[in-house]
Length: 316
Length: 316
Image 1 (tube, chains in turn orange, green):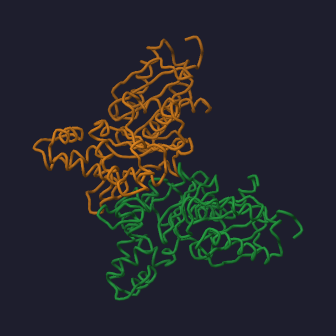
Image 2 (cartoon, one colour):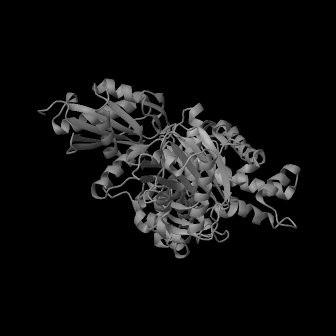
Image 3 (cartoon, chains in turn cyan, orange):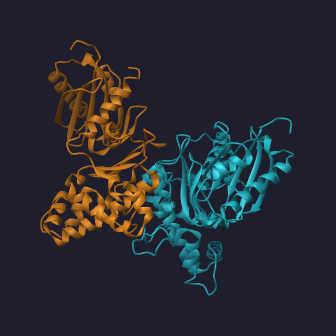
């Protein structure tokens, strides 16, 4: 590489896989990779990131000294300004200075952020290219459920970096115990493991959330009933987000949303039904407001890349 | 008055009363008044405002030419930048250019805003004097229920000025028909008229929401049951606001909240119960985060006054 410090690195650290994107400062993609996340210790997590970054640099013929900054999305509660992962259960991290550690490894500024929030930034910039946007919500439905928001063109984090952690709103006070200590949190009903658990009451063998959606499309009455229940709650969640933030778009992603149309259509049907009698719903919840994450777009690494760009303005 | 254009006027136009506050530019109170709102026509509404402003000016020995700007809160959907009241059912206003009309009357800049949002601005500045705040939600529980938000120190309005209109989130799909055309909106259960309607099933004569709260304190089992139901839903609403916005404070006001401790304590009990088993609730919902509107503080007129200050930066 001719120019020093002309590369940006976006890292999406998942519970099982770590994806890395390497671009020039103006966003031209040079190389990408995905490696397994080793997560038995903080050192293993750091090793996974270093390993993946080495691969993309090698692929582009670059070296560590070419990197201007690194952004990283982490599945957990992140203190962004301190660079600390307060808690990331799937990575076995607790009060871990991931930002400083990676910064010392690569001698470059590092900005870390919650993964859903990083993805929100990626989606915002992606959509904003073709259609100017001010307010956006990203709803991630996977192992858990949470939302990220860009309001007035800026990522909104709230007082404790907890804004959008709606998975722990109680929707059924008599429901099952949640890991957070409450009963009947949204997450205990509409997230992937919750759907699979619900399905276990109806099916002879264990099934995943995506298998439930497939079975519903194929005509299974039991699966259709589970999908109906989940979709009603998701529709109500989206209505909450729209009435709370009055965003221009709600984008839905995450493992469960990967079921695509089988996932989205029952939610849209719910709103179509509400719109029949309600001018307010017609105004606030047209189909055009709700979309799945564009197929093939890696929101996590692109969002992390935008964080890296932000980090170039920080001190090393 | 010695100085020209040195006065600010804050107007809170309610369905039955219009309150006006007159101050110097630095917020020294000169005079206040409350007049009945005449609301059979747009002209009557404008007359009510003019009448009240004349009273406060007269009270302070000032004239219209001393007024630097006017801010006004309106109970309805407001297009702030255009100065248009899109819809205010209680004032019989629809697509009415209230801003331009008042501006022409007084030859001064006028900024109008939804009343709950105006009150939110008032509360924010009031609390911020003693305790610096970045993120605040104000939940108004009266004839309807809606929330105003200050995020990062700025009023947040959303794409259509609908941010916080949570009264029309569906909480009971089999519930009664709402004026908005949906069934079982939050507003059909926890607002003042909804509580009175619910009580009508239990009491021989018509009772108001505040009488229901009083009866519950005096030991009426039926009233206590209604209060329990309403408080549970309000607690869940507050939890939604806190998880969605991660605000530092949730302030509750409006006609129903005027019942004071009888209103607040059942909500706090709900959270105390949740906190027993949930570290997340301990972190996010301590009692100190939730407060009633300070007694004697007129959030509506003070908020409108801050809008007037903003309006001094607009062109006449």
